[in-house]
Image 1 (cartoon, rainbow, N blue to C red):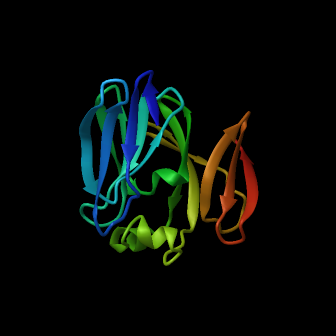
Image 2: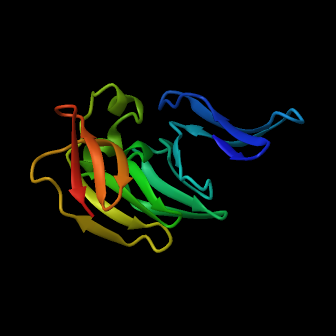
Image 3: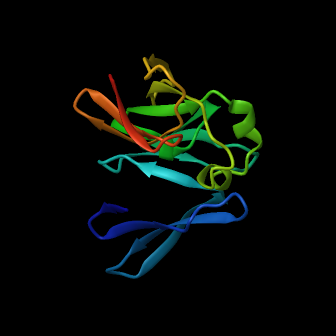
Length: 170
């Protein structure tokens, strides 16, 4: 991910079995510095690169956190950044698993990526500053939403149960 001209962020493939590193690299100067290192680190940057959603597997499960302008907000629910999409710097939509107990003991992100654990999600809008959530009317059947994208006034996602594309109005 390019943060700005001359600075990129590099990370290795996340796993709950090993520590994942995130590095800042300046290809012009060759400067390399460690930004974070934690087990199961998964991240999602917004388009302006001013906010990041991330989760780790330090104490089991993947509690979602947001970092904006060096202020961190830790949320009280478990989900993966890959189940989210930014609306803007301060607001995101996420699929939050109803089976929080299963997620809290899963080896994330491994168990989710290998489909050892599937989710039964509700869709929420999340104010990343205040932590307030707003439920979104879902499709009316069980979904394990991934690859969330916002286009216009609709939230699109792939349901991992049938690999089909769905949308809901925002």
